[in-house]
Amino acid sequence: MISHRFRGRSVLAGTAALASACAAVVLATATAPAMAAAPATAAMSRTTTAAATAPGDGSGAWYAASGSPHSPHPSPSPHSSPAASERLPASGSVVSAALVADLDAKQVADRLEQAGIDAAQVRYGVRAHRVVYRTRGADGRPTTASQLVAVPGHGKRDLQVVSWLHGTTVYRGDVASVNDASTDRAAALLFASTGRAVSAPDYLGLGVGPGTHPYGDPRATVTASVDALRAARAFVRQDRRTLGRHVLVSGFSQGGPATMMVGRALQQGADPYFRLGALAPVAGPFDLSAFEAAAADDKVVRSSLYLAYFATAWNRLYGLYDTPGQAFRAPYDKTVEALFDGDHKAPEIAAALPATSKELFTPDFLDTIRNPTGKLRQRLDALDTTCDWHPDVPVHLYHATGDKDVAIENARYCQRQLTANGAVNRLTDVGDLDHNGTVRAALPLVVRQFDAVRP
Image (cartoon, rainbow, N blue to C red; front, side):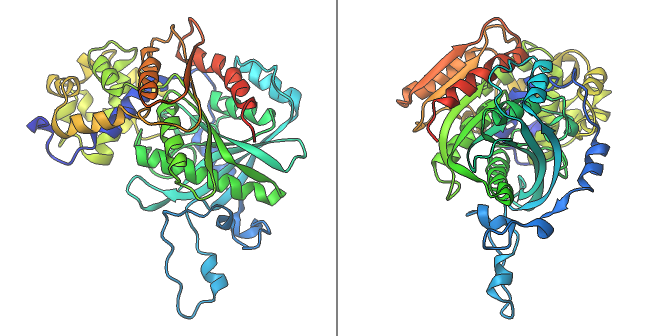
């Protein structure tokens, strides 16, 4: 049983485990200049609404190209025409779009070099839009989310599509669709410059999406990512372009387990059109229970910040404690929750917290994380198995022995699960690099992996 001190509301612990474990990249964008949330909102005011610019795809509606099988459509009025009922919005339909980048090949290469990413594979210029689309929240209710959709500047109509799933982000303005200087924007530019379309979801509550981010929630992660693919497919139709059915899925840190979850959903038929084409997770925290315990014992860099993000997001979603004082020591119990509202940047949060989990959290809370039981244990077990299935495509994992945030043992843990299921897999160690250095080194390797996948 979970400790009585945390029994106030129902606990969905596995989701939080993913959240905390993936927090290893929470400071990844702290050193890059970030666009403030206000400019992002202002930019959206200049967007074109879907109703005004829906492509001529036969339906007159954006969502028709990317309908959602799991999203119920309201029953049409007995007095409404079939054409009117077909225009009811669905998950994956486009709300608006704004151009955020229009670069030639040299400008793309310059941007990648600034980000510390090898630009040798750049072949085309790239146009990128911030696309707002309809999806479902962690509670299953309709909401919106944003993503970056990037396409190559060549004239080909049929495009392979990459789903790029980013790492942990505490500030809503640090995602690919908003922050031009982010590594995730650079990743999308790289993939698109090699001739592919890219769907890079911001996840719920980040970018220009409403509310707070349901950090690490499996259902919300998969739903927002698959709906982003649908919206990207609908969006590119305005240029009479099409996306191939087989999705090349890759992601970093938090995006590592997300890559495996989205891949599994696509293989299991989450969308009637898209299929799984390739899997390339980078530096993912796949052994989430071990990561949680290590963070509680301050064996992870910036443990206090990681666990604070986990605790506040999890409590907001599922109920982890009755009062902040049950989880956080004074005086932090009065301030921590407000820090993780999506509007505070990583350096601000880090400066407001003590250096260790021991200083920030109560002993009872840390004991619960170290020694989970009952529902908590069950949920953690479920989130320890994002690699515990048989993908129909080879899985290529990338990690680094020098990663002190998410240890390479996480990749080996994932590899063991894949091997036990008879899945073809490979692990590439990119060397003595830190966490963020891992993704910069891995991205060109992922491109070469995707080059071998037939459209």
